[in-house]
Image 1 (cartoon, helix red, strand yellow):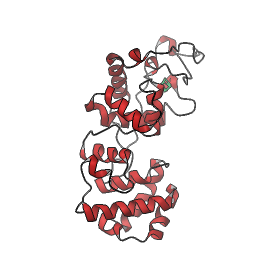
Image 2 (spheres, protein in one colour; image 1 turned 90 degrees about the horizontal axis):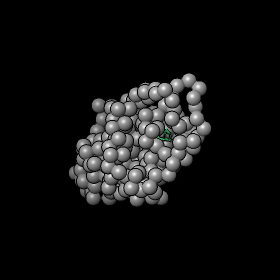
Image 3 (spheres, helix red, strand yellow; image 1 turned 90 degrees about the vertical axis):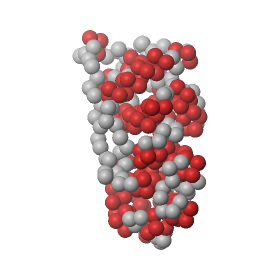
Image 4 (cartoon, protein in one colour; image 1 turned 45 degrees about the vertical axis):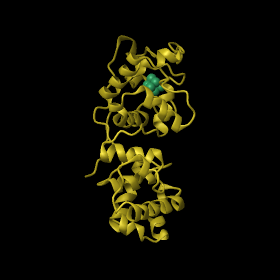
Length: 251
Ligand code: SF4
């Protein structure tokens, strides 16, 4: 069943200081949080509540009908938009509907189909290699454990977390993509410099029952509001919890 869905953030409630032309200079209300303040349980809870309010229906934006299709789509999404991936996967799965079919695919044919997602040589090898691994080592079924999934070609920890969380409802980790990485820093949830370390930081401070939806929510927030350049802070319902130097507006 396709799960592609556009999730609009809930409108930010206007406060007296957020109306009309009362835009304040960036930095006017920014203070540096101590680590203790930043990671205080009540602050974390407020951030999670705001995300739940803004993105109550956030789901994975990659169209897929099975764990296998999600695995392939996630591998293709590296350095590529989900929209672009969703444009190529229908034809890819029409020609190669199962891991067994894709395991026997010719690389030039795979490359031709996935070319527009970029890095097509490596991605073609990865998805065919993943298909072969699933057929030869896992009986044709995408494995349900992190330890097994990360042995599949093309499936590093982030991809494994996506498949486990979305397809199997298993919270084994927090998906850290470019949006989660950026926003975790803007919200002072981490100071780490790699996705792996940021994930460990987030796993320590976010309750496990939020791990799956937290990533979906933050990814939507990063696409729609907290964009990389010039975030739309005047439309952000986390604004009063955020002390990022990147803020473009402060209440
Ligand atoms: S206030 Fe601005 S920088 Fe902070 S989370 Fe919201 S959009 Fe991002």
